[in-house]
Length: 416
Image 1: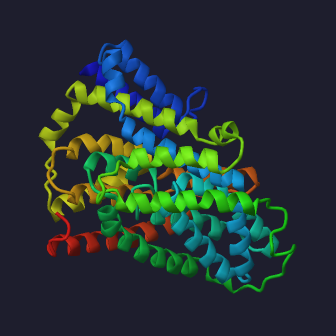
Image 2: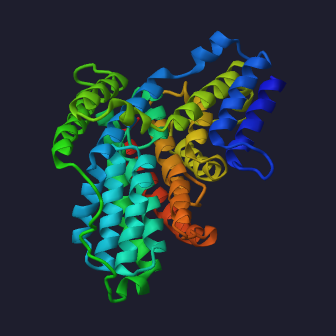
């Protein structure tokens, strides 16, 4: 148990403080090294390490990444940018477009990928309109977290929860889409109030607002987009026809590779393999800790009950802990603790708390970090304190919305 405890502690320190000065380590490598140490230290045998990997989640994530990569190579996101930014003729409209487009796309496409593709477009739009990009980048990052709350495929932690909880795609959507919808409205209001002067300034375009130069192939988009549409429909129908979400995702990925008439190798190269390595490593680390009984001793010290007291406790813990490790490692850490608690209530609380809590600080979620790094490459610095000021208000309001709606669903008997 001692070896497992040390390894999991070091792994999470590596994840929380990635890029430690003079230490050549980042998040994927921290998880990978932790997994290797679990085997070398004898906590898990090699076969037990393989068994600890949740291949259902990996398959779901991989399948969706291939579909998204195909959409990206077809120019789907470039076309979306063109259509959206033509509408955004004023700062206020640009805010609405950024938040709504990011939130909706993040609900049905993995939010980390969405912000990776959207951030350069948002920056370009701000420069064309000669407006301060900071409010829009903060709004984009937070909208990606808020919107992704709605579905199992919105973000990696929801995929973990959906696969391990047994909650159907449709039921998950019914539980949390109202939270995402109301929280999106709250986010727009908070950003507007914080930066009201910025949104009232007149616009002096520096370039053509039609965003020329973003390439897309309409013929290819028409072949690939229906694959995404059918995939989402099948996800909603999965519980009725006993369809597996990972199988649907992998099947859709295979169809996208063929239907797009693009180089399959180039599409596959677009997959975020580092994120998959990160997941695999964490599965092994958490599996080793679970095998060593670390979570048994943890459970002896806490009591998480399937009621609103448990929901409030889990939400508070999720919001706080996600600032140290970000929401994916947090979710993996908490899942063994609630695995044997009956019902859906705590799983829904974890999905909402871990995701919405990611908006508190710039390191609270992977999506925030991606936006910050993308902005940095363009010479724009997202200030930690400024993000925190907005994030504290957004997190307080959205988590409050989540707790209120979950409480209503619980007392009405819809959520147990």
